[in-house]
Image: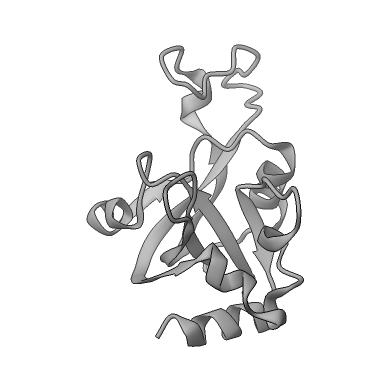
Length: 150
């Protein structure tokens, strides 16, 4: 099993939305590296920290699990979607998504608190200039953070 951190703006999809819906496609990823993580590295059963971004207090808000492998992100085909890509076709989709299912809501573990732990200094989300919406998390980082979510 691999571990991930997946960012979502809570006004788009929040941990509470995931809890209510049970599963959601992780749509709208428009970065090739993040897309490639979904395509090449994410597997059903992988766990991820659900991270609220683009909000007043960004941070880890819960845990989700990959429940469907990478497949075409339907938003790329919808001209009314902010994620529409006119170069994408059903035969050759440019953008992929995985489906995730709700595991648990946690206390909010703010970005500022993550930064206070030297054990997490290597985490990709804490690196200067990191803007990726999906990043790998090491097993040690996962275990350390899970202890702080209790």
